[in-house]
Image (cartoon, rainbow, N blue to C red; front, side):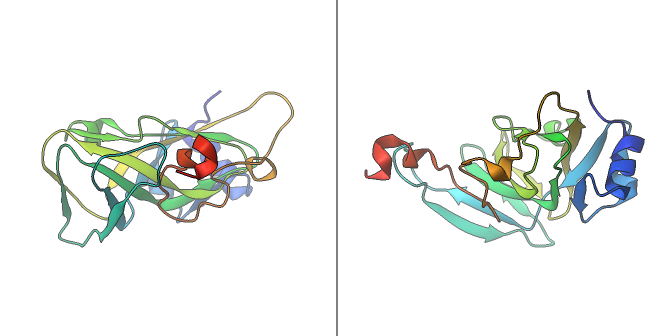
Length: 178
């Protein structure tokens, strides 16, 4: 079940949901509007699942950064979000989609117990300028069923994520020895 905007506000007030920074005006009928952070990584060259991804990191200035087609960008949310009570779904929205930006299509699930600034997968269909702090998508909170299992208590690959993170699939392929 998806929480409504008023239910999200009540859960934030009760410390059941973390959204930092939190702005009540960013609530919609059943989601929270999240924003793009201030840094992106541009993944360089050919990508290989068996090796760490090479990247260059770029700040997004107040005058913006032009995203180019054919490149994979890894960004970060401005907000740190999470909950021990609820799972999360992070999505792009119609506004960014209308600009030809595909954001976070492959990994929208935020597990219970994982409070993070999300690493974002970003692709542009045409050159488009983005700005730090711009609304970039919607975050939905979901009730869960069954015995809670906190992500932080599991042997989870990304449990210690603090910033933009590259794929760690290479750790599974040949034990990361390639």
